[in-house]
Image 1 (cartoon, one colour):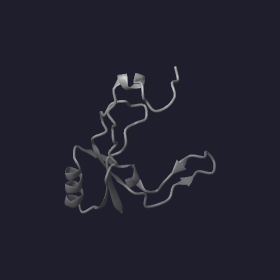
Image 2 (image 1 turned 30 degrees about the vertical axis):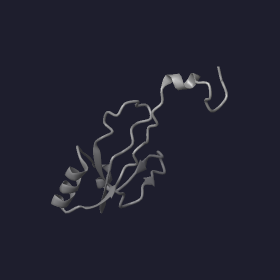
Image 3 (image 1 turned 60 degrees about the horizontal axis):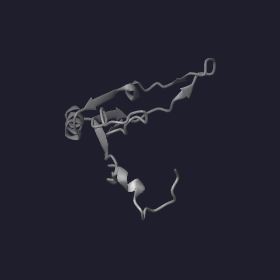
Image 4 (image 1 turned 135 degrees about the horizontal axis):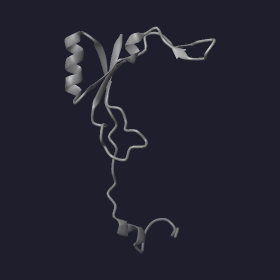
Amino acid sequence: MVARISRPAKNVMQSGQAKSRRWLLDYEAAAPKTVDPLMGWTSTTDAASQIRLWFASKEEAIAYAERKGIAYRVIEPKEKTVKPTSYSDNFKYGRIGTWTH
């Protein structure tokens, strides 16, 4: 059973960076999910896939996995690039694009 250590992306309804700097250790599914024929519910026999552990840093998550003897895989997050702009750039004379107002 292999664990994933990653920093999940923020929620799409979230504008700030709260709760997006934590690292998550969760287990990859060992068994596929099955659909109950009567009710249509999805279930699995793998209880470890329900475990989600949060850590303040990547090093803490790696140390925990090594201390418990858990095989792990680290997924590095993709950092977003912010292009700094100012509000006045919307009104400058030689701006690229057409005026939309």
